[in-house]
Amino acid sequence: MRVFYHDDKPGDCRLPHDSGVELSPTHLSSLGVLHYAFPPSSPSSAAQVEDLAKARAYANRDEITVSPSAMGSVYEDKIKMFYDEHLHEDEEIRYILKGTGYFDVRDAEDRWVRIRAEPGDLLILPAGIYHRFTVDEENYINAMRLFQTQPKWAALNRSGETEVNEFRKNYVSARAR
Ligand code: KMT
Ligand code: NI
Image (cartoon, rainbow, N blue to C red; front, side, top):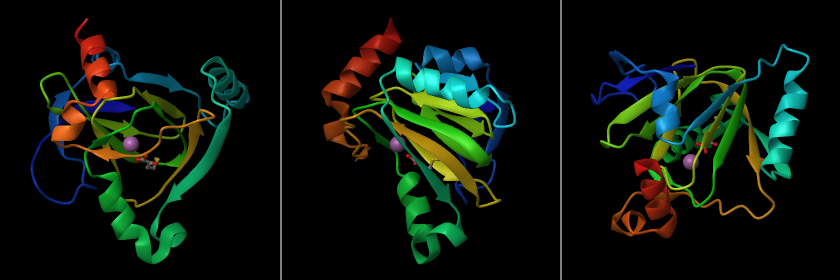
């Protein structure tokens, strides 16, 4: 994982958009974003992911591959959808198995913080945080998604309504503390 400010320049979202300003993992934890490194090649990783899922009551999971060959004609549309700024009323947990991609999260000053995710990175984005996702120029990522039994999984695109969403308000007040 690498964390840096997005350069906020227009252009293909799959490019690095690296501002050159590197951020520490502590910056992420101050936003309520948790990160674990469970290398897929390490024999203990699968059990560690299981333990974490159990501890947070995540009963369900699936695997997603974002790539032109896995998604076919809907690929470009899916990429645009993932990159629309949104929030969820529940955590978003992603465990990267293969490939690479970028998770962008808004910080307290509303700047985009870009997280470059690689195999072994497990990220937990808290409910209510504004975020988006893109693959990089390799156009390939394979990840495990974890779901609680009753996921509130709709992506709510940023709008006047999400600004007053109770999960958003709870997130902002928890972050400020
Ligand atoms: C999401 O929620 O943005 C996704 O599921 C994208 C693929 S996970 C690497
Ligand atoms: Ni999301």
